[in-house]
Image (tube, rainbow, N blue to C red; front, side, top):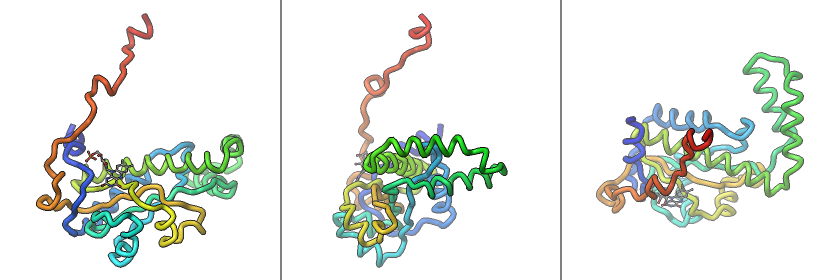
Length: 216
Ligand SMILES: Cc1cc2nc3c(=O)[nH]c(=O)nc-3n(C[C@H](O)[C@H](O)[C@H](O)COP(=O)(O)O)c2cc1C
């Protein structure tokens, strides 16, 4: 149950001390994002790992000068794909075939099913769908970092258009949907470092249908 202690330890860090994160820990956190489940397994988002202080300084105004951007060790930008093309689906089919050592033709029905579900959606619906997958990655990163005893701040407080422009995301057909600062807390400067966690009580958060309730 140590991970629950880790999840209680973590908090959305407001002030960082600038200390860098060991490469192995960073690698593990990124791997957790890569291993996160996504709808149909499509992984329709990219993650930009930005350690470069100069680039983070440039991005800071677009992220409303939240101090986490420049005081942390790195920021991860979750960039959702704005669309899903047949070419991207085919790349996924080829990846499955190569990874599982099966002929790609055996995936024809799966491919058709994916293309069918895409064609029934508007571009906005596809973008929103993709963005939701990116948030699963954000959640996995936050949890993995806590287990690594690395601090994080999930952030939606930024101007996507300005971030997209600096990172040239639009021409890649992507848009920034969430940012995660990563590093180590500055306990003295951060008022929230030792604040008790505020959460809704479990009895009003969860509705439990016990097995006897269903089977009568
Ligand atoms: C999607 C998302 C967006 C958030 N955006 C910001 C943000 O822009 N700046 C910030 O300081 N905190 C941000 N937070 C942190 C939340 O305020 C924080 O997670 C919440 O108050 C619960 O507190 P805790 O994470 O410290 O337990 C965000 C959290 C999430 C999950």
